[in-house]
Amino acid sequence: MFKKIFSRLSSDIGIDLGTANCLVYVKGKGIVLSEPSVVAVNKKTGQVLAIGEEARKMVGKTPGHIVATKPLVSGVVSDFDVTEQMLRYFLEKANDARGFPIPVRPKVVVGIPCGVTEVERRAVEDAGKNAGAGKVFLIEEPMAAAIGVRLPIQDAGGNFVVDIGGGTTEVAVISLGGIVISRSLRVAGDKLNEDIVSFAEREYKLFIGERTAEDVKMKIGSAIPLKEKMEASIKGRNMVTGLPEEVNITDADIRRAMEKSIREIVATIKDTIEETPPELLADIMSKGIYLLGGGSLLRGLDELIQKETKIKTQIGDDPLTAVVRGAGYTLENMDDYTEIFLETEELERPR
Image 1 (cartoon, rainbow, N blue to C red):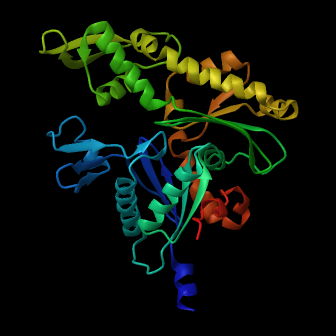
Image 2 (spheres, rainbow, N blue to C red):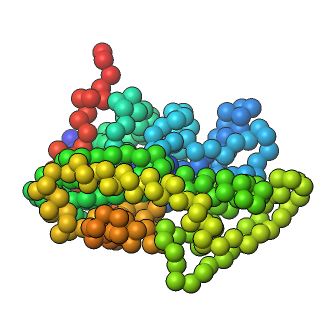
Image 3 (tube, rainbow, N blue to C red):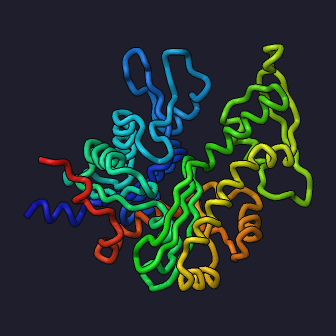
């Protein structure tokens, strides 16, 4: 009886467990947390020193025995223990946001990439339960993103979603509450940052960090030529002299650096279109392609995809939070979305 009473009071939680950022949605309150998926660990003792924004500030600035690392690679768990501690930290902060302690462990909906293995699914589920979740529901990120922008995914019609995150680009065609076709490409925001780092080394003999690369990508990066030339300065270490140096870089340079990776994303979208059944493709041509995730904000990417596919392409509302809003919406309307969660039977360990 008490459990039923507390379960009515409990605030369940939706999590976008991203490679770059984790966002947390509390039922009845909305998005309460958005922090980088970074953990600082003391390698000598194994102690976690900082998580989230505090750990991100340490990236590239730590002594040898302290490592600021991302425990998720391409959206899946690469370090189970660290991921568990990171999830526990986020769940505790979400619990603080609820305003009162509740003895019932909450239901947690977690967005994961398409095509992950059963072992990878189990890792996410186990990490969530060990971190304090009562039951973990897994939802594929393109599905969550589509729900987050209120696409009619349960209708008999095609919905085309491209979710460009930090570690993966997820492309999916959704109809009747299920994913008809999906492709997962491990080329996304983080790879674009790496491309810029490599370009600076190759063209300018300048060694820069990934944070610097991300900053310049956001300032002047684009997928197509811009009407007005943009410039930014980047600071790093000259690889020849070993001394600090500052150089000016243009939007054309950044575009050239990212060109190959952007072509891969566009090619994956075109390959998915080629596999889409004609009836669904007719729906998609009417509705268009929806770009979601932080990578969709790259200047001109929507125009490039529209030009290459000949299909209207648009950026969804608030693309950075689409996945976590979708996870949260399923919590608010759990009975309507039971069929979209990955089957828990697949996740149970043999007895």
